[in-house]
Amino acid sequence: MALLTAPSRPALLQRTRLLGPAFVAAVAYVDPGNVATNTAAGASYRYLLLWVLVGATLMAGLIQYLSAKVGWLTGESLPSLVGQRTSRRVRLAYWGQAELVAVATDIAEIVGGALALQLLFGLPLMLGAVITAVVSTALLYVQRHGQVSFERVIVGLLAIVTVGFLAGLVVAPPDPGAAAAGLVPRLAGTESALLAVGMLGATVMPHAVYLHSALVRDRHGRATPGNARSVLGSVKADVVLAMLVAGSVNIGMLLLSGSALFGLSLDGLPAVHAALGAQLGPAVAICFALALLASGLASTSVGGYAGAVIMDGLLHRRIPLLWRRLATTVPALALLGAGLDPTRLLILSQVVLSFGIPFALVPLVRIASDRRLMALVPTRPATLALTWAVAAVIVALNVVLVVLLAR
Image (cartoon, rainbow, N blue to C red; front, side, top):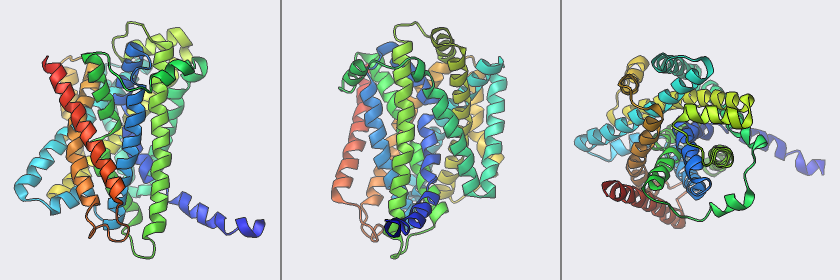
């Protein structure tokens, strides 16, 4: 038996060493916007919208795999490939909407970090927002010392997020029967539709789609006929494991709020934190706040990385990191300074992200279907058809949202 298993150990170790890029991208799927939408959904509708999270996680896994595959087989980021196939005017317009997505991303993540610091230490929101922006920028400088170092820091923060947000389930486990009923797709009016689209925008993140192709390219280089399929197998395992973690955290947040907070009148994440402390004890509330802080720091760093990838790919320009961060941080600080409700900002930012999804998905599927670019491992027609269906569902949900809000 030893003779049979021994040769597999080096191969398994090598595959383990290839893991990492998908976990960095997965941080985008457990950012403070997810916390706001998931806890609001659970507290207001219990397990009604569980199906949204399950479906969105499956969609996200498929999309992230295609993005990683494109980056590996072409040796280019998705924004770079889009830039090569479009005119200068189209490139600028495309970059403009991508920057709007980046701003919406930073709003959610900086606001989340500021709220966490307020909950933990009583800091004013503006001071907490500045601290979050400064620390997340410092985390980005770690990337200059090598992508593996950056990945390790982000995975460490992701571990804190996972433990912190799931700890409460030990104290308040959900009702299995009621939770299973939440897997049946249905809505309950305009507000539930708004939350559903916000949850989708928070789970299928446009900037994560752009970034993942670059992360795989920077980590693995470009595929050759000799290693295309073997490394792609490791890339697939990386995506599956990362999305299992992210999906479990999101689902756990909704289940926790549905079991412990359903029916309570909660106005924002501070109220969620206070209710968790009252219902489940101070230890669970502290874990929640620490996870929210780790989520804000990690996700805003990843969002900054994605913004640089988008600008470099579409405009072929690299600006100093500090200026790059200011471009997306200032709007978040301005909105907080204007006195807008931070939790409402979080939820609405996720809706903006949802409208940016088609601009990432359509080019991704078109490029993944190009047999010349994907010649080493062509994308199966069934996979392409499924991904087109996913894009259609997302666009349809956005149309439904606009109609409901107009009424």
